[in-house]
Image (cartoon, rainbow, N blue to C red; front, side, top):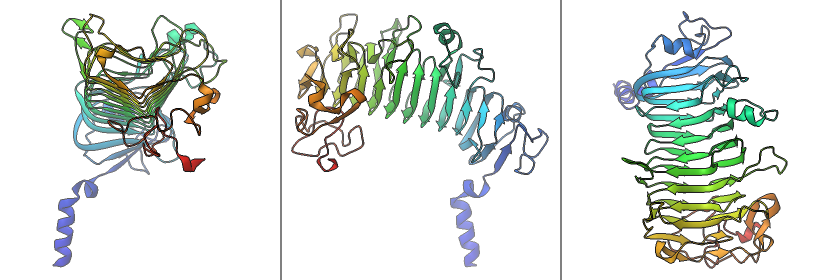
Length: 428
């Protein structure tokens, strides 16, 4: 009797765990008429999805090495259905396109054109506004694996847009986007983009266009200037009834990201990348904190039209001593002349802070004079504070985050330090 009661309770509490199934897909040895077991796998994921196979929440579809075609799916689940690489395998798909769908997770998949000599798909991962609760994790997303031989024309004609998500509650995490046009565009609301690498891009690294979104701990580096786009590491604009710049983007957090114009001075087609550039507000209730921006431009962090936004503990430096630059931290008017109000700029490091006093409160920001006086190794992008840096204990503890760029405690001394990285005495 006790065993029966215990088993019944277990079935009630964990039905998804007990009833979930595992399926296997093998482009080399599979057959579309197989049952999808490990011993008798299906052939390609594209074939499986084209047959409108239904899955249950908690199911996992394991992919083996080989090319699986294109993932084009619709389907709403009660719990997550996971499509992932089998351990030790490297499956490839040519694109992922998600329509009316809910609770799908993709993990460990390589996404790139089957024929990398031509642009087959403009968008490698596309999540529609009819989708929600989608996760894309630990994937490699690329136009081509190696772009070193590309000309500027190749970049224009062959690079693909990495990810566009218009869905709600989408999580894009721990992915590597390589050799793409634009990297990630977040249009939908309540989405998270964190711990991704966007490496080698010819447009914007990340676009934060949706409300209530989080953009955190991403690495954005190596911009290729091959067209007329004004390239930004992180960019935003609003859209209202009268078009661009007539709406509001609100409740966005941009925290702990690093933006590097170029990591190799010998890189081809080096451009003048803007850091965090938001020129067509209004922006309301944004928090921009603990970011490192290393660019060759005046716009290190710029908001054009902002209300009740906070720019706190960021480090903004020039990648060289040539014009354009050095980069500033600035909140200015909306382009239509409307004033910015109620903002806070605090505890930042940059070469200039040209905001007018009426944009809000500005305090404990430090103008960098000589980089060598502040950082461990500015020339090698090591922007930890050195012992005795003018930024140490120079900030104000109010309104700050609990962790710094390196996830150390934000206060380690008499007061918070200025800039993105807190000086930790015991690490020296």
